[in-house]
Amino acid sequence: MIDLGLTKLAVIGVIALVVIGPEKLPKVARMAGTLYGRAQRYLNDVKSEVTREIELEELKNLQKEVQDAAQAVKTDVENSISQNMAEVENAFTDTSSSSLSDSSSSYSHGAFNSVTTDDLSRKAREFRRKKLVRNSAIPNWYKQRTGGKMHVTSGAARVARFRPRGPTNSSFY
Image (cartoon, rainbow, N blue to C red; front, side, top):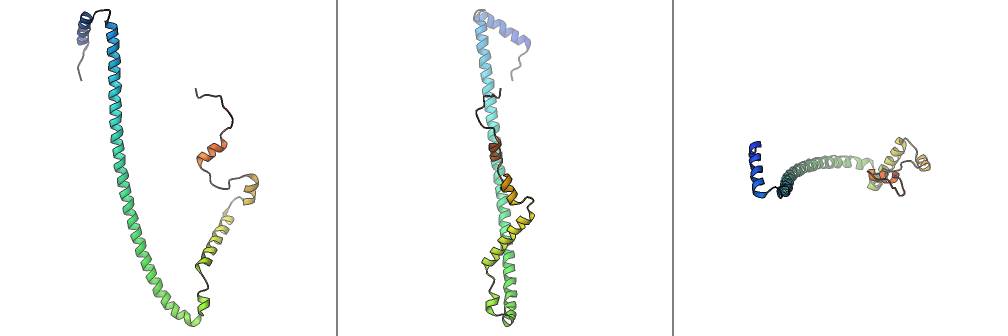
């Protein structure tokens, strides 16, 4: 930067007084001050814009790294699941073929195939429903009667629900 001491500023002031004159000197000084302020604001804006762009670029790089890592983890998990599923299916087919030959002599074919996937899914739904009813601290009939919480609401919905209604003439200031 330019090294301006007190003596140099005094010399510049005397020269400006002689060249410009005492009548126009205050206007010129005011204009120089406003131009200097504008230049400083412009430089600060440029610096902040450059900093913002650098941070944005860093965030984009970080996001790309996280996405790559997540994709790698996802593929690893999918590969391990598929390998485990293949092992389980192989083990199940081996045991089911041996148990099917054993059970075919003791069970009839109609009794062996009586359990279907629809029955299993229905039983699972019933079990979950009954478990929720057992574990619930407040009964549903009480919740319905008192207007208690029947389902989860978001924060924005709660704010909107409890916000005072009507026109307000109050101001923040």
